[in-house]
Length: 487
Figure 1 (tube, rainbow, N blue to C red):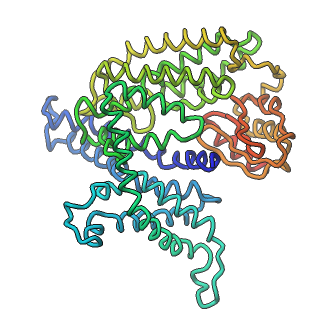
Figure 2 (cartoon, rainbow, N blue to C red; figure 1 turned 180 degrees about the vertical axis):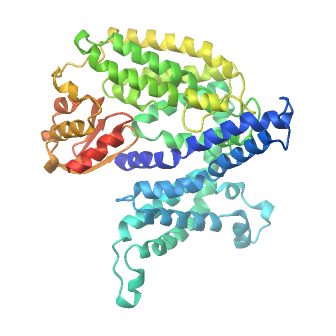
């Protein structure tokens, strides 16, 4: 079950990857259009070139933000398919269209014979990312099960992949019937949780950030994010912020708190881990931690840092989650409001700083400096006090010569990893997410973690006897491509 959920978490990266372009378009658009609409800048008037271009870009970005659930339905279906074939994406779209139409307020009113304004409000929120994910899972499951279906000769045209959409439609009708009873209950529960945290104000933002970090190792943080960032429980912090449809001073509460620890806290943690590493390993960990810190600061992608120590020193990861929660709560309490289309890096911060709902973005500097100091001091103290095995402090020694493989020769890196896994005969499948190689193996005793780490990668995770995850970093796609060639 955990493996399935982790695969789902990876699949969600496909539609989420569409968000940066929407953020860039809307960010630039709002630099031009809001000033024009408010008449604050000489020469930028409504109807003028800046206004037209800005509005054009805002609408272009909104085309993705406003239809994010469609992206989830298609992206999850493709990501969860065995061979990532496009037919599964079509199946996911078929499922989405059928479920949302059958459970729309108008359809429910017609089926139940009640007035449209008396329909349970849950059905007015049926077109959300949660339903998109369900549709994607239905589409992928039907594709995986029925893509090789053989029908009698008189129905041969509908054999194989052509049968997938038909079967998906049938299962979607069943799913809609089940959701007719379940969705109002689920929706009410999500709203209750959201309202409970919202009612806590800044404290709620801190609790959310804390839980978000704790769920990262299991890939389950996306489920929590969907409640606060998207229109599942009526909060839609992300979509309302970028769409300028939220409430000034409130919208952005569940994103602003991520910027300080992503841009400053975790890079400072990298510095602490570097300073506490063994003298003979500082050169080795320097490349890993420096690139991971750069990635976290500029893009908000924190996995290269977090996965470098979360399994080596799980207690330290809990400390990080606590610090993230405190950082987020204090940031929101001080009145900073900002948003991101992808994650909490400086790029998204700059793009969102001119949006109408952004507030006190300048606070990122003083808050960030304090957060960086706290992270550095706490990490360095905890690591040395409890002798935690963070990068560069492991008991095993790595051959200095083998570390030279840790460069841009992705073929050499892939060969080293494959050798450490026991050769291609021991590997049954390979996939990758944003930072990790995900592998299925036959014999877990044949895996040599020391040999794998000699490739210069961040770490090795073994969730089960048949699974191995190799933390490569943001260049994992290049390593995965070479790895697949070797197989």
